[in-house]
Length: 73
Image 1: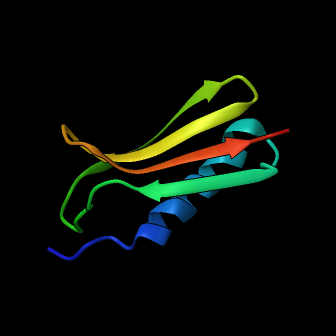
Image 2 (image 1 turned 45 degrees about the horizontal axis):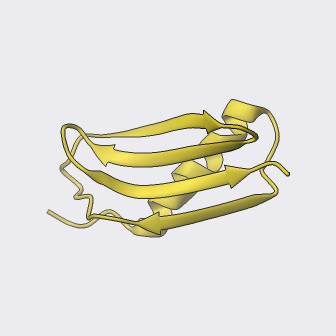
């Protein structure tokens, strides 16, 4: 299969953060960790970490593909 563009995954995570918190973050960082292919089922996830969110995409049953952090300082 084709590899899903890393910045597209980051954009998904970047759009998800303000949906969860109601306002855009002041700082957003991301890092690709493993490939995600076009035929993979995947999830977009988040967990709160103080004033920040840790976000990630991952294949079902697989490793994290893209990790991100959104901060509201």
